[in-house]
Image (cartoon, rainbow, N blue to C red; front, side):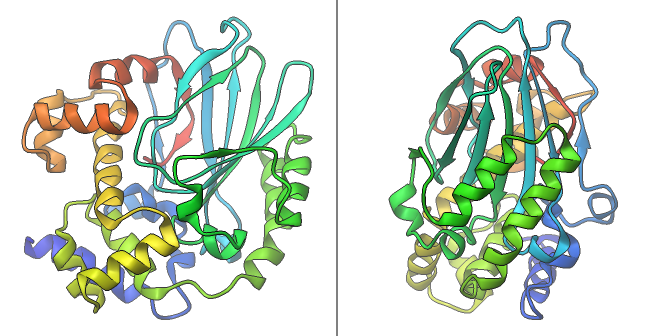
Length: 313
């Protein structure tokens, strides 16, 4: 590991012990490196607007007191001209996500998407509106009282347990704008977060290190950095996140590669591959196909069909 990357990892580790001070930084740490530039501007705003917009997607912050467990809130609307049952690929992020959906007639539905390291395509319809909650990778098990390994790769609906989750989803689908969605989610999540069992500090440190280094750290080295053996790390990480550290690292590298699509002057895929640690363009393409089921050019075409507001990669 380079000296610069070691410094970023060590800095991330120092954030963890004192009451999980990640709450001070906010969930923007999920965007990657903790440089002064990214700390000052946690969100990336896409500047390219397609001529035919299929969807509008944006993210917004939870209250600071619950940001130790909640990475972000998000919203998405589907344009009226989109055909029925339009396929929408979900990019893996290593998190458990709750999605609340109301259709053009106002009929509500809610589902939970488990952690995954494989493609998942869902169908959306014209006029659909979504509000969602993205948990930190290691916090869903503490909040949902469920083994995330049993949720791996699954889409669960309806959501009946725990009781607060059903109340949250019912309240979210009735929201009309970002501010009301944020207020409702903060109110419904405050008590569950306060009552949640403590997070595993070793796993949290490992999650942050993998995010900060964009997945460019050997798992043996990561285990040494957080003070446990590789086997212990893999066991504790899997129990809290539902994925292996290596799988989560692969997801973070993918998302770092995709982030360039949100900038007005994206680079070539070969340049991106070299920047984020892929051996070459072919290596990048294999990971994209494995995790998303699409080639880089196909993903770029999908992104051009979505208007992005504030987004953290």
